[in-house]
Amino acid sequence: MAVTRAKVGIDRIKPHMVGGATDEVPPASVLLNSNESVFGPSPNAIAAARAAVSGIERYLENPDQVLAPAIAAHFGLDGSRITTGQGSDDLLARLARAYLGPGTELIRSANGYLKVPNYAHANDADVVSVADDGFVPSVDRMIAALTDCTRIVYLANPENPAGTYLSGAEVRRLHAALPDNVLLVIDAAYEEYVDAEDYEPAHKLVDEADNVVMCRTFSKIFGLAGARVGWIYGPEDVIDSVRRIALTFPVASPSAAAALAALEDRSHTQFVFDANRKGREWLTSELGALGLSVVPSQANFLLVHMPDPEKSAAAADMALRQKGIAVRRFASPAYQDYIRISIGHRHELKAARDGIASFLNGGA
Image 1 (tube, helix red, strand yellow):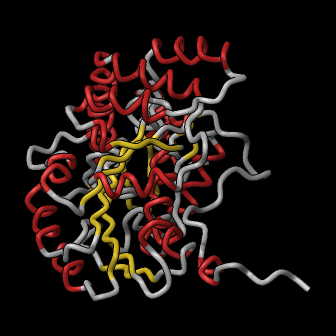
Image 2: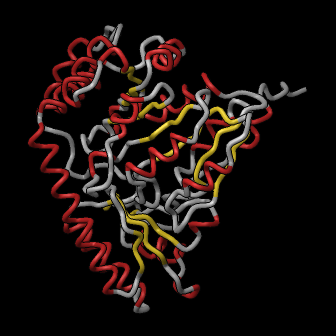
């Protein structure tokens, strides 16, 4: 007899991305599917990680003691209210473990980060997915969805996979409507790419409230996706809860060394920001010239609508993969007619543009 599933919610967990490499297509050489920084980490971060390998036989006993002060100094935060983990996904999962359970609810924008429901399901909590406005989270609908069972309201700002965002005023309006016992989780993984003037850095609200936490990562603009380093900033009691349920040694020593060096190289971060913005603007313009609609993005990717059923998103994805170009599709029906393209080097973006143009014009 099979062992009974420990938590019934686990059966509700579903994949949130579609497919990937298959035997029908060659391995991709242009990787525009996972929102990594194609510009890589600071050379100083690579050197620091390599140097740290010489002590890799040892655990990094207290990564917060090493990383939190450096993160705090870089962003102007209180280091005692920071804890770290294996990317922001690890920390989001821990927040769910700490604050969700049977009979509780997580509210999220229906077409926001598609993995978030799985965190709630893994803890037998319910998910309330609120309709958005053209992939922009609806503050009014999220407020209307609040019940006595709500424990977490999750907001990715900017959102993924659409790249949309809420202004600081809208985020504050959402927070003002929350009861004190509801935690607002702001996933700001892409915040370093934002150039919208009405965007407010998430830490400002965290500093003013007792029920707001911000998740961040080194996987995006710092170019350390493979190192798996994330961090959160929030009220001391929330950070204490998340820290208590961490793995014993949650961050590898080479990863911590790379993260520290990445923080110090502000010129590299500025270079990536500038290059990403130029690439984002260029590809938006080029795809628009092909007659395609692109969701305005504040991140390092673009969500592209493929409106013609005869030239579907699935077919476009396959056509690009035949050319060795990987983009992303998603399992949600709302994204059936969309592909997401990460911002790459200019020659990679040109290859994607040319591949899409060829596809639209009936080419192979």
